[in-house]
Every structure is written in C-alpha cells, then in structure tokens.
Length: 131
Image 1: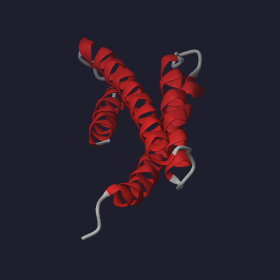
Image 2: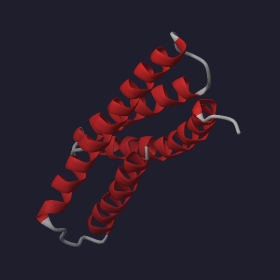
Image 3: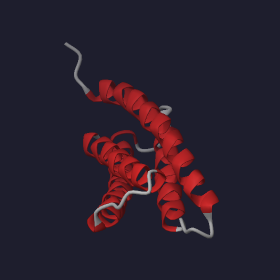
C-alpha cells in the first residue's frame, strides 16, 4: 500500500509540474509526460495486485468476502485509479474537459486512499495476535 501511495504522490508532483509548465507557457522536459504515464500504469497495476492479494487472503482466512468496509473502499480505489488512467489517456487539446475530469478524479482518489488506509488498518488489527 505504501508503494501505491508513493506512486500517487509522484504522480501529483509530475502532474503538477506539467500543469505549471502549461499554465505558465514554459517548456517541460520531454521525458516528463512519459514518466507520468509509466508511473500511472504502475499505480493501476499496484492497486489491481493489492486487490487480488486482499481477495485471496480474505477468502483463504474467512472463506468469503465482505467482513469490513475495506472491500468497498478498495474497489472504489481500483475503479478510480482505472477511471483516472483512462481519462488521462483521453486528454487532448480538443477535449479540455478530460483534463478537468482527470484532475477531479485524482482528487477523489486521494480520499479513496484515505478510506482504504483507514479501513485497512482495522483489517490488519484482526490478523494481529492479541497479547
């Protein structure tokens, strides 16, 4: 999870850098967009991996799903990450609304990460032995 949050922060930095360059009519390094796309793809892969680990672990431990709010929070984060990636790939000068949609989706994703972290902590507490 920490790696996903780190990727999200790196995406915020590179996205902010691209926004600043665009708004101030500055040139940006050629590699910046590609780095943003690669880290974004890495984030989507990470959240899908975490989802699969969570599902397999929960099914292995409990035999079924839905024991906490962590599942809907996790599914929301996965959906938002995928929507963000798709909307980011659709950004084009002829579709300026996609840039806004991408940024808003990422802002909502921040709160999704907060929710999944909070609910995940309660799930981890169930697995830790009581002393």
